[in-house]
Structures are given as C-alpha cells and as structure tokens.
Length: 317
Length: 317
Image (cartoon, rainbow over all chains, first blue to last red):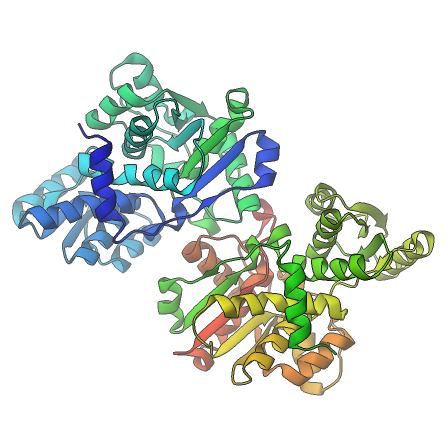
C-alpha cells in the first residue's frame, strides 16, 4: 500500500518532466449544471493524457534504483505512448506489445515517441505470451498500466497538483475509472489531504465492473464492455481495488448518450479536445444532478487522444 | 486612419473585459511543418473569438463619449455574439438583425449573451433595411463588423498582446482575412512595432476576394464564396483595404482540403477546438511550405465556434 507521502515523492520526480496542466472552468457549464465545476485539463499533458505521470514516475524509480535499461508493456492505448515517451526521456528502451490490428494512428503515435513495437495476435493470451517472451529474452521489466504502486503514485500527482492550483476546498473530486490507477491515486491524495472531500469514480453503464465490484466487495471482472469510452473498458486490479474500497465514496454510472452530451458541452464551452473517457465524470454529474447542485466539483479530464475525424457523434446504445 | 497609438489606447479598454488568451505551440506541428509556429489562441477569448476585442472597444468608446444607449448590427456570426455580450457588460442594449433561417445554435448564443434579436429575410437587402429601420426607430448606432476604425483598433490588440507574451521577434505574423478587420488591425500593430516582420493574410482559394483585390489595387467584392471557413466569406471594406494595401506583405491562398488538414493537426496536436476559419493560416503554410521553412511564425487562431457534432470532416471542393 502507498500513502500521500509516496505521492508527494512521486511528484518530485514527475514534475521534472510533466507539464503543469491548467485548471479550467466555464460559466456556461456551471449555469447549465447548477454547480461550480473545475476541470484539471490532462488532455494538455505530455502524450495527451495523465498516463504520462505514472509512466515517468515508475521509470524514474527504475532508473534511480536498478540497473534495468529496458521495460515492456502490452497496451494499444495511452499507457503505451506514455511508456514510450517516458523511456525516451530517461534514456531507457520501451518494448510495446500491440495487437497487429491496432489502428495506424496508435501505432504511429508509439513510434513517434520512440517505442519499439512488437506485434501480437489480437487476444489477451497472445499479448501476455508475447510480453512474457520479451521479458525472458531481454530482461525488460514489465510495467502494468495500473496495477502497480509506482504507477498509482504517479497518477495521484495529478490531484495533488490540482488541489494546489485552486484556492479552495472542493466538495467532490471525480475521476473516470477503468483499471483504477487514476481513481486510486487520486483517492489517496484527496482523502489523506482532507477526508471531508468526497471522492467519486465515474464509469459508463456499459462497462460497470468497478461499480459492481465496489458494491459486492470483491472484484467482478468486466466482460463485453460496449462503450465509446475506450479507455474505461478494462477491469480493476487487486491493488487498485483495495485502495478504492478503502478510500472512494461512491462509483456513479452514466449512459453513452450522456457521455456524448458531456463531450459536446466541453468541446463547445471550454473549446478543448478530450477523449470520450474524459467526459465520463461530467456525464455522471449530468445523470445524478441532484447530488451536485450548488457544490464545488473538481473533475480530472483524463486525456485528449481521439481520432476526431472518424469519431461518431452519436451514442452506440 | 488609425495607428499603433490608437491600438494601445484600445488595449487599455479591451483588457478590462477580455481574457489574456494563451500563446500555444506543439513540437509535433513544428516537426511536421519544419518551422516554429506560435498560436495565439483566441478560441479561448470571450464569446470564443477575437471579435470580442473590437466590440468591447467600440462600445467602450461609445459609452465614454456619447449618450447613446443602444447599438445595432446585422450578423449571424461571431460579431453578433460579441456585440451582444459587450453591450451586456457595459449596460447597453444590442439589437442583432439575423436572417430568419439562422441556425438555432447561433440564435441561442446571441440570446444567451443578452442580445435582442430582430429577424429578417435571408437577403443582404432585407438585413440592411431591417437594421436601418431599427436605427430610425430607436436611435441605435450601427456597428459594422469590420469597416470601423474602433473595431479595427480593438482587433489589433490581439497581436499587441501576443507580441508582449512571446520573448522573441517572429519572422511572420499570419491572420485569416474575411472582411479584413483582424488583418488590418494586426498589420498596424506589427508593422509599426517592427517593419521587418512580414504580415501575411491567409484566405481560402474559394473566397479569394482579398487576394484578388490586393493584386488589383482596388476592391473586387466576393461573389459566391464556397468555403467551409464560414467566417471568411465576406468582402473587404474600404477602410480595411486601405490599411491592408499599405501594411500587408502578401495574401496567401489555400484549398479546402488543407483547411481540414490544418484543423485536424491543431485538434490532435494542440488539443483545442477551433473553427474552420482559424485553421486557414496554418493551411496556407502547409501549401506554401517553402516560404516558412526554418522561420518563426505567429498565427492568430481567430476563434473556436463550430457546430462540432454536425461538422463534416472532409473538404467540399
């Protein structure tokens, strides 16, 4: 387990490389929602997502305390790009195992950041086998996208930074929840800073494993997620779940339609580009409006990586 | 005619109400283009466009120096919203003459900012007649969207602010050109600050009246503009053209395809929402790449008002 001190230590490393992203607000959104909402804009973070924080923290620790020069992960998402760039910045080498049918835009992004791509078949089995082969052949260290305390501590620096940027205590802090790295890191930061602040996870109804697991008290893995919030289709890990059980107040759900509505509201009012996963917190506020009326809410906008030209601006439900 | 001093005086008024918008850059864009490009992000300005600067300057002058309490314009674009909000902030009343077939999103925006909408038939004749009627009935002062020195001076404050934000002298400053308010104000600011900086207007091939007028030496009005850059379909005015003739180095053109390419590059690299007109400067750089290789370029991103859900991400040409 980690605590606020680990996150403060992580921030000492993270801030050497990460951007200090702005906290934004819109009087139009506040008027429509009836609450004061502050958006920590991690879409402006390096690689376009908060994932850079966890990756640079984990790799900084590896570089300082081991002889390891190579790391590996299997991912086609923001963690892959984050690990590739963090490796480049620290002079390490990152192997990224990606399904051979990954979108070209994602393959190119990892290449641009200097990652070495190893293709595999598009199954979880093949991803894990291929990563295992890289570990055996190269001695690379596997860096899990969320079920790793170094990653969790890195993600927790985002809320730490945001709380220092705003000059008030929010009533709520809300993050999206997929594997739970951002939510668990945020929860430690917030609750160990001020336990009166409510920490909420936001999840699509169509990928509601965190909500179900939270209610059940044990992990119920995600099967057949069907959501446009592509960053949130994964299941919780045991490390992230333990933290979430202990620190998070609630996990709220939202429909696909609300995700699109929230995205549009953010695009048109804040004039920023976010990915669907980043709209999920605002979508849960739209659907559970009565909980938030009149309160101050800090939302972590997780990222801005979206194939905008091909994005379908209607719900899949 | 006005000069840099008028623009400095305008800035004293404008900065009481306008946001100081950020100047952004992207190493990815710089790598792709082969130049150092700096984007003055007026999409983050009040009402989502630089037009607020001109409107608040004109109305501040009216409020300080006259007894006039009511203003009028005919517009369905950013100038309408800008005049509505500027009026509200200064305690004046704005009548906005809009074609009865205007998109609901634009009608609602003007209403949200407190403008009083007067509908007219969708012809220039009807717009002018209706505005004239308002002037006669109410004594309101007509505020032209660009052919007015108070408006031009206000728009010139954007480059003034940007030059003070960056700590170097750019080789080029580029703005889109429609009616010429932004370009002419920018040109005065830049050339009277440092005449070695080249000032370029950027225009769609499919609405190239400024390019043609610039070459001919007299105004050639725009007929049948067919461009997705909806803010740039208007013709130059005599006041803006006189300034452009004297101060601007060149007017470069771009295709519809390049406008889309430039928009996508900005959305995906800077993670910000802009309207098609704002992408036109980068589009002209893409098409005239050899002129800009290795240089420092300041671009004014004119605005971010776009019906994103219904926007067609392919060129109309």
